[in-house]
Image (cartoon, rainbow, N blue to C red; front, top):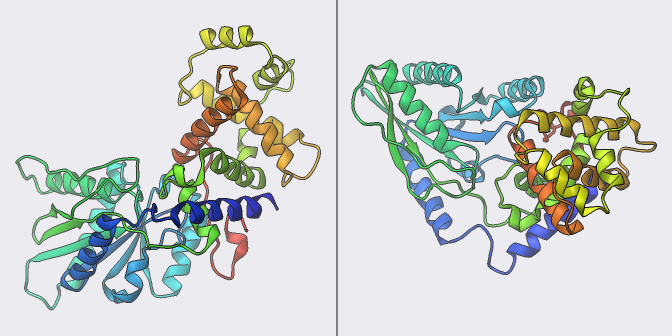
Length: 373
């Protein structure tokens, strides 16, 4: 099974690359862990932010020993990147296990306003027997799940709702994991006053589960340098090939065409002159719609026409090669071309341009996940 094999290989590569003391758990992360642990007993609510695509793998390990369920809410951020029906199944599963969860998109104003309303309702329940008019919420999670983006959005929308004036405070936001260095306080509501504490992302020192490790790397929690972009791109393609996402791209395929651009690219891959001509004729920004459409079309045609088991690693190799044409990658050395294709593929996956996935299975309900490894 290509997916399981790749997951093991990537997981072991990450373990080997971090075993020499060069891993993610540096002194800064250790200090952040201690600071978060000290604050957990002091706050009114703890919001654990997870990545909607990996509801289990993105669990914040530090909370297992500290937080009673009564003051803990799980926020599934990046819900716009996940399969909606499967996310609902996960939230239903958590509810059945007496866990409160909520789905949100940190970059959507309406979603943030609904989250703010939900939090204010939770605070009112919490404060029924308490006359204190200030509530403190601790925002925690692993790196790169969008904690700071959530904090900033809640702060901005909350101030608008309360008609407050003054300069906005901002938490540091980055697409790279580990950018938040300190705990910062942002006011998100008035009457009663609600403050959210944004914290640095923290991972456990070691992750023994290869499957979890690989999913964290694929979604950007663990830096690509630990796993390798090419390996992660292959892992994504293995997931795509087994899913139904590619079938939604049939509309981009035209069987009457003499051949797709990707096929033409493969046929002319020995000609650097043709490669340079293509580079001049087509923009190289892979995020443009017409290029994304070409990528979807190429992948749909390759998976649909593959004569064999989609688990076959030969399909992944052919897809990587064909993506050079879809992305208009210059025909240079094969290794450089594959590296560029891998980086572009990962970017499109992580921004939701190549489908919506949930990579974790609900316990005892394997049919509810996109993949089973």
